[in-house]
Length: 351
Image 1: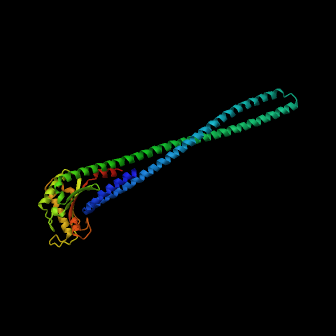
Image 2: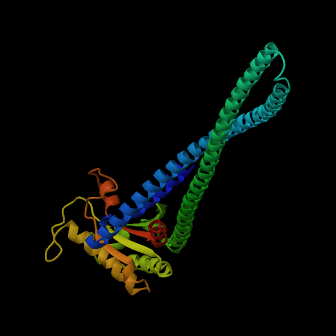
Image 3: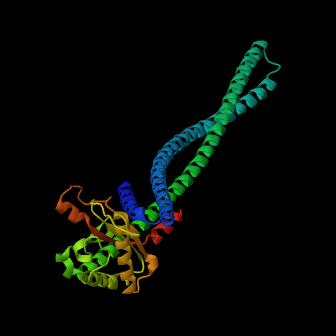
């Protein structure tokens, strides 16, 4: 699900950046840099998210293993503690027996030599048993101390693992929060673009049969106008009906200060042999785009900073066929309205 969201964000960002492919060199370079930054942040978010999930899974497994080992050590510690207590009781009993035998030995020193030898042998055996018990007791004490040390170390490891897990979970939650913010911004942008498309469609409804279309794609609104509505063949002077359509469009766009507006002039592949400053299809497409920019600014309060005029000549055809109908489609002007992505860039740059 997370990868799918990131992919949607990347597609929207890429589409937004493609829009600037024909802007002046300085703006192009700035947007290209922002695009690269977005791509890097997107890749970084995906890598960090995958790494954090893997790390969380690994730490949870380590936590389960440590808990299991702690339980085993606690059981061993309990068993050894019981053994130690039993050995201590036995040791005390042997010590009492040893003292009793010493007392008896003192009483019968005058007794028979055989009894004395027997008593000495019993005393020696008891002393040896007592030494063995002492040795076993020391070994158990050392083993118990070792177990307690291991238990303390495991508890320390468990505490550290829990802290690492909490940190990883917190980092993952933070990444998911930022992704949701990005999705929210893109969703708001899509809603704004759709509402704008509906307003433009309603404003230009009367020109639908004159070769004007309005559509939404790649997060932008495209207003495509055929040549016959705006210009006479080979001319860049907008006729009266075309000016009317542009003025209606301008009234909608002047209420949208948070969009950028690209006007692209397109021609067919028939060579244009002009004179003066307009010599070919490049010049003609630029002049037509510039003429539309001037009408939009003169008939509304649209900020010139929102506008860009670009000539695409014959090199972005809708139909590559060498037919009359194909060339008619290609002779067009496209007005591309794109929402500004400042909020989105701010979220990406805050990482």
